[in-house]
Length: 402
Image 1 (cartoon, rainbow, N blue to C red):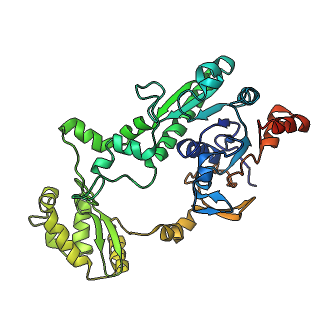
Image 2 (image 1 turned 120 degrees about the vertical axis):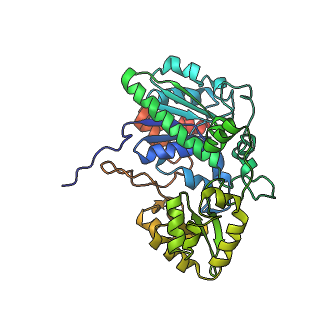
Image 3 (image 1 turned 90 degrees about the horizontal axis):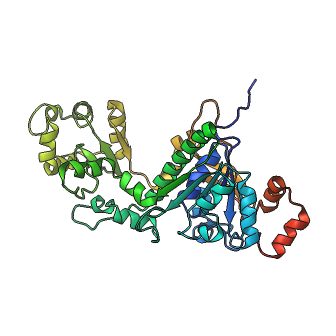
């Protein structure tokens, strides 16, 4: 007999004021683990990403669909006194509040942490901003590519003789969502012990500095800035993209054991693993250009498929350089259920990227489609605030709700 267990975050309710990407990705992760997410949206235009199209399907943008599964949407104008009063009523029934507005937006409605904690001391309040609420730059707006530039990430990204490049994905937003989820769950654990919430001040800039990791640490101990290397790695060699007769592939050899396997079983050059100049990592690094040129001549003699077969058989890390469609349609993607189909109220069946989380006892929730703007307004007000239809309609006529 199968017993349906509670999800990891069952019973946790989140009042989600966040928009665009970092906050919504955080609450989407929480929703996958069973948290109830009440998404507060402006009643006229909703989350900014609803308008970030094309591409779109039935009017639903790819940006919004990517970050808002498993949520309920309430269209609520909290800039009006009655709307702010509803926020307080909802907050009393929630465990977490998350927001990413410019400094002053929440405080003008007395919805910032200092005001909220007086009435709702149980509330975990996560504020995501570009530079932090307590920062000399707290009033500045900031977006992912700006943070990539300011934190130094662009400086070492790109070809050797090219301009600095930003990562085309919003990687700082994505990393921030992961840190936000981690911080909120840590605060929830503390709340379980003390009964009290707390404030989380999470800055995209801080996250961008944190994700410098080994590159940043390299500067701190050497005093030298990293340089752009394209697809090459500063210490792992060979590590990069190579061309075959049928398409490019990537290899990454991080230790001497892999280098020997590669020489013996993939390229049939056993002497390269024992003789100068390629036998040692230092030798390969000092002769990087010559090594890569020789490998390029070898790899262009056979197909991508054959080289990958040899790499796999030898236990050497390598993979095809795919486009997005090839990756999303790959058999291993399907085997891990990383693309899921869900019914959508406007678009019919929609395919979404799934959750990467795998729990043996409490699997993530079955995904539901990102909501239409204000799709659940009536349900939320009736269920949580026990509001009757007449009262809801009065608020709707006053354009406080959608």
